[in-house]
Amino acid sequence: MEYTFLDYFNEVLSIRLKEIDILIKCNETISIGKVSELLDISEREIMKISAPEDDFIEAKEILHIMEEGSSEICLMYQREIECNSPYIYSAEEIAYIYGFDLPKVKEAMEKNDIKAVTWQVLPFVFSLIPYNQNAMKK
Image 1: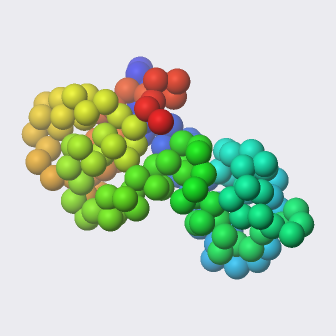
Image 2 (image 1 turned 30 degrees about the horizontal axis):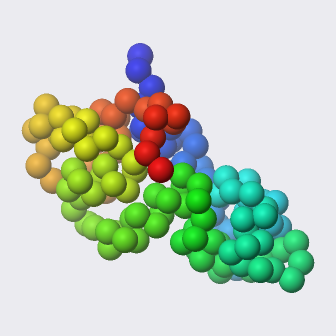
């Protein structure tokens, strides 16, 4: 069976996003090492972005770091914000936000007669997109 973006999303991204959400809601200080691990960026990059006084940052700074970070999860967040977090996604927005080839997204949507993609439909679209992390656009 082919590995899809939905598999990757469920196994990696959603877990990280849930952890990030919890950390932000707890509103505590967090070690730079933990943030580095969750966002998959170096501690050095975090230091450049947030310039903390010690080895910890405030939880509220995570979103700022995501806005400036260079990792896959940060770039997806930046693109989602840039597209104004649409309620209905176009094939172009899905391809842009998640780094997919646009023709693959269009083909998947056309083959399955998908006209509008909401959050409820997005996982199904993810299941139609083969995933190879090394081939994703950055």
